Length: 93
Image (cartoon, rainbow, N blue to C red; front, top):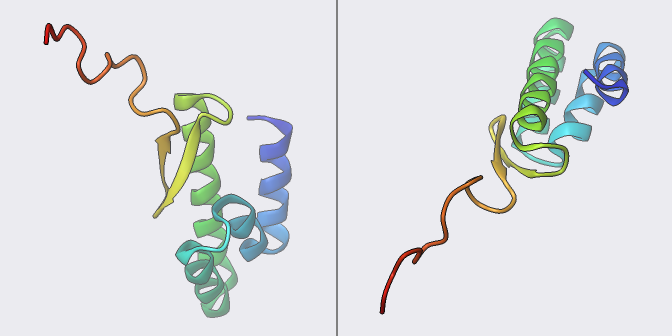
């Protein structure tokens, strides 16, 4: 856990939609988090902590900056599959 993640967690404790906006940007997850926070503080907090957890998980898997957020708490690598051979690897024609 990096210091930036600790700051995100503190922001999530103070105002969950702000942390969701930092992690997911202006996406459907932000709207969901705002709705959950209006319903109650703790559902919004849990959702923002879940988004932060998924971001930390993506940083561990793909490295810092090696991923892009695609929505619904999922991330994809920036340059396709890691350690995968090129598309026509071994082709003779």
